[in-house]
Length: 254
Image 1 (cartoon, rainbow, N blue to C red):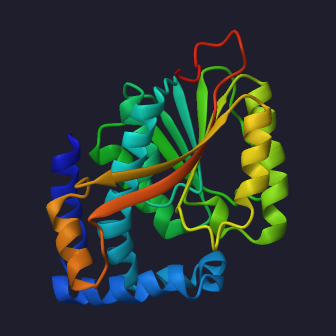
Image 2 (cartoon, one colour):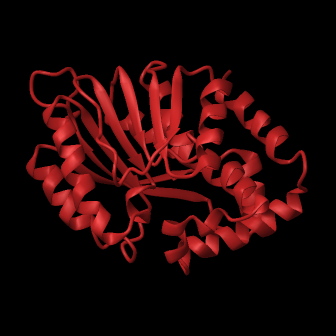
């Protein structure tokens, strides 16, 4: 199924028992968690109701999809497998897998609801993959040569003490031949850990980028954003990218 058909299927799935106005109100509440009450993110409180879950799937999922796909395309990333840490509804990992030529995908997330959504996303988009309930603070990242380790909108939601061990894990995966891509919101106020990670990535031969894209969000998501008072004329993100070691096929574009 192509991404446009996936968006139609998303509507059918999440608007079956909710009206658009209900989802819009839930999106307004959900967005406030990301801006004002980030402590709720680590505990899963941001998705504590059907409305918020639908809002996340209908708005943030497609937003993460289009941003991730564009970033992977701009960086010229190629991979034979995607390992998606903190996969959420699977949208970002699916975008990377599609851009990498329908690469198989393994997703991991602590939320059983998100994992179920991710598996639905993979099936609906015709991807070979499986999401599993797992705490990315505890799992050993299994990724070798040719793989892409992706963490999209996941690292910033971890408790402070969990980030350093995860950094060690992704750098170890890179030493085994995997590429690593981290994507997060561009707001510096909440990404206090970003500088340290960027220094490590750049020292290892990677790069750090800020991205700004206009007119990227699909029409349904624009409508939801407008109703919730969100400005989405320009979508922004920042990324850290570390290609596989020298001798592997992945490289940093010039």
